[in-house]
Length: 384
Image 1 (spheres, rainbow, N blue to C red):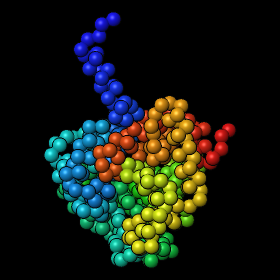
Image 2: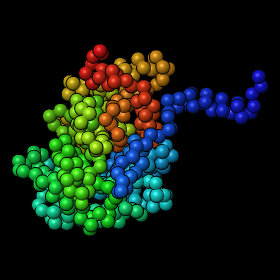
Image 3: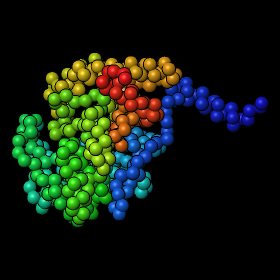
Image 4: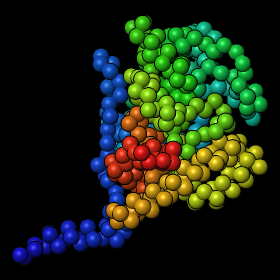
């Protein structure tokens, strides 16, 4: 049988991609809807491009990563006014050059006021009028940076104060009061949907009950908690950070009706890619230096239970690659574990380079092959 020039061209391309290590890349992005009629209903990519780490690289590199994200099918971008080096401003400028209505901004407000290392005063404290004014201060500035309304606006922390990195004991503001503030027309002009981030499950579920009982109030449609195979210990990475666990997520009633938009320090820019020991030593150095952003990573992540999970992920990657002729890395296994979880809807990723971005997108394909037994094995260390 004779082959056409076009056939040879395609065969050559396939061979080149395989040699270049691209055989595992799945460019078919997955999408889910968030929201409900008669309000906005958005179709978002399951991988959401986080921008915090993009503030730490040259702007040319930032643009290169954002452009590649769109090419790979990512259409949602997670940002915040407190992220580094004015990344929310830079993201807004880039989005306006795209002139597209199908790219969505997820940004945040409700940040506690930063009064010094480990000391924060809540913006969600007080009555609805006070909370509205506090959030308006942030939301109006964020909205001005984009050519269209914010797609989803997250309350990035619940109502809480912190002193010396410890939470101040006091009753939190009722959820109904916070939703009343967020439903004020003066704020609603800035965003289409609302969600929460780093809220405890009881408060998330209360928000759903309150919104059902009061149709005039906006309902939070998503929650963005920490979720990873590498769970945080008794110390959280960030002050006020909230995680959900494998056991939580296996409960079919868990945060029912809320889309889970999870984050971790493993999405794209993986803190453990250099290997467990090297990453552990780096985290210890940051702790000893009192690094304001990463000081708690050592105590939060580098504990024995997580080391055992990491070692199982290493072994799993080696066995899977030997069986299927692939070349997945351990950080891809960690991301695939989250994506394969039956309760995970979206994953916020934070790559700094195009290579990190592409490697993270590859995790979507690996996730399709992970079974419930694989998820349990990687977490618990046993096979049924």
